[in-house]
View 1 (cartoon, rainbow, N blue to C red):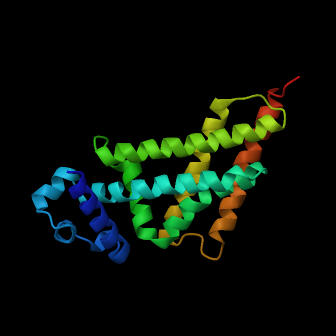
View 2: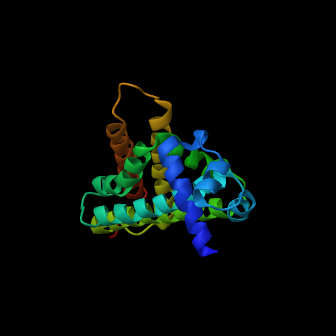
Length: 204
């Protein structure tokens, strides 16, 4: 069973990368994986779920790479930028697939196995962002406030999500996407720090 799932995942990844999500059929994937169509649907209920299967691993890889990049960065804004950069880089390699993956994470069926796995990856990503912002504030003498950092990390993921969609839709032409993203992250990270200081969360 694991060998079949691996063949299906590899076949789907190759076809999605080569042709884009909309151009690929489940029959092409089953032919490439050398499994019957009925067998394919026992591992993933739809083409969308096949995309989730493939891109969940890409999200996990991006998270691990981002954590490695951010580990040695002291500036909180640049650390968060370093953490999200691999995700944006991977999305830029196949904007249609990345945007479709994001859509399925947000609006797909709540019962789909690979959507649930993808949402778990998103949660891990947001927790890593929150931890990085808390670590930065702790170094400046601000007490831990994981709930505030959690909300801020969700905001960061939201602007990253829109940046990935922008790669596909071409919105805001004439403006550099990564430069805009860095400014948005700076506003969120610095806004979190300023809000916490203003509400008296600095250590005595």
